[in-house]
Length: 542
Image 1 (tube, one colour):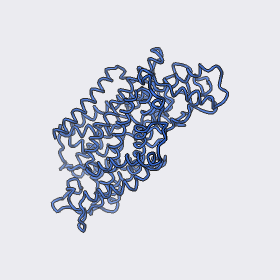
Image 2 (cartoon, rainbow, N blue to C red):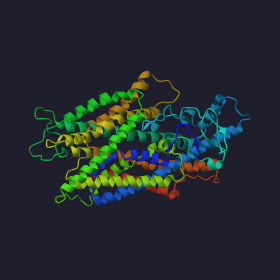
Image 3 (cartoon, helix red, strand yellow):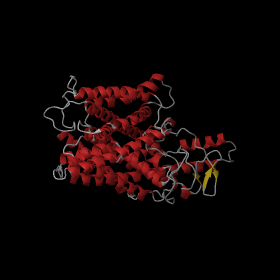
């Protein structure tokens, strides 16, 4: 892509920087639940499954990128067509805004959207909910400003740096941030769009339940000091939830967990009623803390293996009963598809995008193996939240205590900053699903009802269970499979049809997925259905 700024992003960065962002996005909460799931399914079976699921995640990531390019091509084509229909060059910026705003509104093809579709269904919501997954502000409501012609084959105005290709070869340049919600609006009919928002809402509900449970469980396990006489373990992984939390109190560990969860939701949850976003500096601090924690965990696990090399645990080779949870955890751990548009679009050079992303996946998979293998051979008992295997003990010196407290409370620091962002995103998705654009709703409905609907259900789920392995497994196996497999396959299928109908077969998509055959789309859908059926059957069997 030629130089210049992107309208939505306002800046560009190098491919290496983009890959670092994708790496940080993928390696998150799911990685903390991976060692326990890896152990339960057996190290050999887990190795095969992780490699397979990493490949499937990469495959559908290429589908998302191809769909982004097709969406950009349709937008560019429609804008150019609108400009050609004008009998004179607009003399004012306001006229230019009107032309391209109108162009963007009728971009969808009648074949997939329906001839009687209302204008409300074509327009995106005031704040695209999916764009807020990582705290980015949505800018879809900003006018699409055309630009003056330049020697590079694009057009720009003096007031804007948005780039509109006049050369058909450049139509597929990814210059606009087309989030999943926007692509669903472009390529799906009303039913498909609503199904997409339902799927992303369920996934975000699972996210919030996982975040709430992880934070509350971490605080509870650090705060509770009572150990039953029969328990000699340094971790709390095998202590019953009905055991008391302290010698001097009657509250059980589950009682304390629920109290902490209620306090957490009532304090952090109130930010959901405000328009808060994650700042740049908060992202930097969170990233530094996360990588410091991961490095320390690997080092401590390796140190434990060296110290006990004559008495290492022997994890199982394969256990089919642990496969459903491993599937859900791996899908969750490789999830990045909902945020790819906001991360891929600002990359300055996209010629070798797919090989670079493949390299990113290989590095992430290698890191997961390092974290999982060191964990299963360093500890006989693995907590479903890996950081809780590094709890402080009375024998620690001051330095070890600081390290262990930092690791045990690490999810509290990082997930607390993400919780309100995810909840706001979910609230926006619910608004787009249930509210009709253009209608006037009461203040209570707009600012109170939907934040409450975003907070209450996941809090209720987390109150019932604090099993993170179960929560991550269910979220990844169902909603995660929809977002990672079904939605990208459907998007790329309809995107190819829309682009072919609008631009013809002569204009090639240079961001076309390496897996361009329609059989790959069918394979992904069959794979997703098979995995969901297997997981469901296994849950009913158990």
